[in-house]
Length: 467
Ligand code: ARG
Image (cartoon, rainbow, N blue to C red; front, side, top):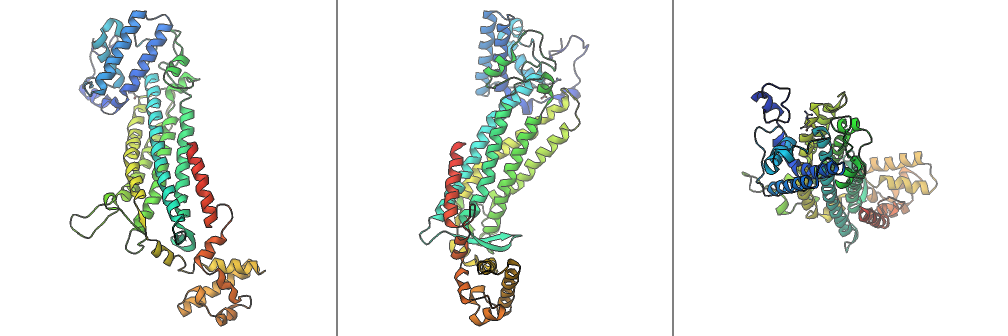
């Protein structure tokens, strides 16, 4: 006996080189509690099928419980001779309850259906954790948006940008909420994923074809917290789209966070000076005493690349893989464990940084009308006066050209300048040439008018409450 999970047909044990390549305990050990939970449920299924006595069942439950306790204290560790978490736990169970009883548990199951089930269980737990962490960030964005809507001297305005160029003034709250909505959709994606994944427990699929022992996969699924077992045992053991989809959502969260991160990095530069980082959420330089660096935002930006890489690697592993289980599938775990670890360490830091960010409202308000960002308001005023938009656009463009010649802003054009550009340009056009007038005018649903942003905040709050 080689002490392995197989032996009968082998004359010698595996070479050390094979063992070194094959071993996965250094990363799959984190699945141990899920494996033990699966074993409890599987023991019950064997008992229900008349394949375990009451005494054997009780002894297996006892042994598995002892292993779980020893795992939690950190005392239970795999041996270098163990290939994976499943084999290690079987060995340890045999040590605990003896080979006679312990040797009965493997009947009707394979590591293929085990790992496919417990990897789902693990990711289901972490989907809930990560969803909660993303919601924390959404809530902090809501708070910042609320605060800047309720400022005593009016809502905070800022230059809205397209192509990174000044485009039209917007409310800071509107802009911050534009980061909250995609994150909320990520939470919703995770929840859809949870519903789908929890409906598909592969336990009972065996190696690929199902079990001949009369075990009830639905009972095992229910015991493990799934809503159903796999409809197809080959699919149950061979598919990893649940892993790829999880990795996609993780990457999407990373990408969404990175877009806000990039803005925080820009906003805290001397040139922008829109925002300031809290001391506890920024770093200094080892040589330049004056420095204050946005490391959290930079790490967020960097880690987004890593999350995308994990998804790309996984899809590449899955591409063209024949059914059913192939050992390649062992490569599904490390990238996604890394995505989980990355988000679980990144999100709390990022949320703290956003929560403590202070905005320079005066600076943003001062820049909001600059770069002729009210030119569209001139054009739309002309449209309301009955001028066709093509003409209005030309006229407003001519105003900008004239301002550039004179080195002034749109509202500084004299009555004569206006009249010289177009007979349609009455002095009343200046009424719309304020940032407050411009944002208040954008009052359709989803627009940046304070009244709409207030509604939007309530709408977001209602959505968050559903999650
Ligand atoms: N450790 C493997 C994995 O993570 C499960 C074991 C299946 N191995 C096997 N030879 N069928 O995919």
